[in-house]
Length: 474
Ligand code: SF4
Image 1 (tube, rainbow, N blue to C red):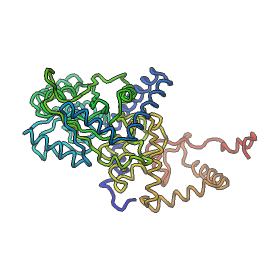
Image 2 (image 1 turned 60 degrees about the vertical axis):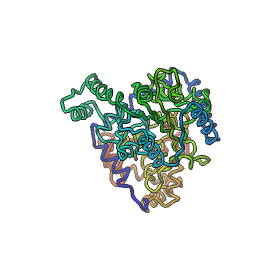
Image 3 (image 1 turned 90 degrees about the vertical axis):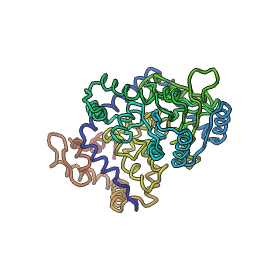
Image 4 (image 1 turned 180 degrees about the vertical axis):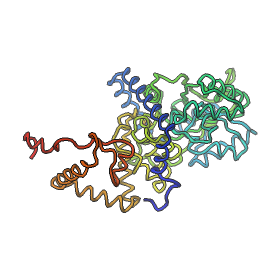
């Protein structure tokens, strides 16, 4: 493995989480529901329309990536033309400083936030706390996690790993009284608690689902309406957006709008789709006095023009998490903060370095390709993961034992004679271990499989022998 080990490996985090029955059940149920909802929504559109939208979304992202600086300049000139301000930041620390400076200049003490993975990525809340500005998360899932002191475990449902009893315990502790684990009571508490923050906040902070260059617009999709309050109630609105969230035109925005909610939650469109074009203009009834857009690179531009560029096409729908057989067992906290699942296993090593995160492409994927099939913008996730594996091996980040076992495996299976011999020996060895047609325990590295599921025991004759008998093989 790498010379510098992360604090704990994916493997150890995954094993701990898989033993947590409550997390396990919540993640399995949550992801299964989302997969069913997406398939239903895609089914309503029909295969040809889904294919057309996916191709259009992919083309829109590829187009903007070809000339990203020019499109961001266009975005900047549009925003500044309407009185907003745009600042480009090379890394997360610079983006945090920029937000803190705006807050300090305004004498702000309280900020309300709408859900934003970009701000999670740069640990903005800690930076604001260091500047004596309290940040309150207003998305229900994020609010729950803020009370729990945890990071999101899912891109769309950040608190997916928690059930209503967990939430009731957190809310009761926060309230200093018992809040029943009933959805209506939990929502009522969160609503009352957050309403006060909306009214008194000096600053509203949002991410950005899509930025449109031709008009300098910031598009936000939510189901709770909190982004509308965050962008209209406080006197200052700050947007933190990664450089990859841009599209050139409204025509390019359309396929993303059509695909994002359908892929994320199975909805045709989110309950609130908000377009923000700048600070309040004379005569307008609401909106902030100031609007600042912090455009953040944080390692993304390094991917432009490389075989990994397509990772920047991600629209953060989480479909790849929901179908991933690894994510569905472990949940998001087995990965690195903040991006989890297949896209996290791609982005974390690319944005933060192979040294610390190479165990994600090495161990957090089965390379089954379900993620690529589910991705609405056609990112070939399993191919990118495979490329990262090759890179990890080339950089010597794989242990001697793993290298040796893979070499042995390759040697055994690359010769028809050795492969046949291996199949016969494996079959013979497995027979004494099988009970009722199943292998429930296996020794050595095979124990990794049987520890969590049963393996069907070999039955009858080998497929190859039967094919030879029928003249289908020699
Ligand atoms: S990689 Fe594709 S499927 Fe995964 S979150 Fe991004 S857009 Fe969605």
